[in-house]
Image 1 (cartoon, rainbow, N blue to C red):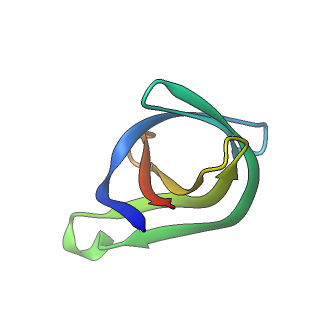
Image 2: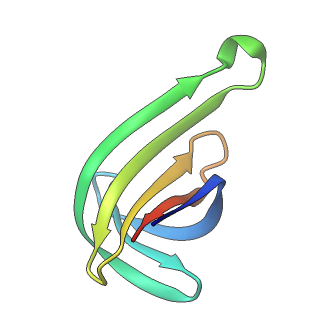
Amino acid sequence: MTRLWPKGVPIVVSQNGSAVPDRITWQGQTHGVAEVAKRWRVDVDWWRGAPVARDYFKLATTTGLLIIIYQDLQTGAWYLQRLYD
């Protein structure tokens, strides 16, 4: 089963020198990043006046989570969007 939060759940992320997440904090627990499986950027709807600009990461944590997170490039805020069971 997969949990999806279309608008995302706020999380805290620390990044390494390459701007790649190396640790996330969600629900009061910190999870180290074991591997980044995929990284991609979404930049859409700029022509409509409501742009969406995000950097997405699909990653595995040292605690066994497989998740998709993203950073809103307009605000800098981080969100958890999908959790794979």
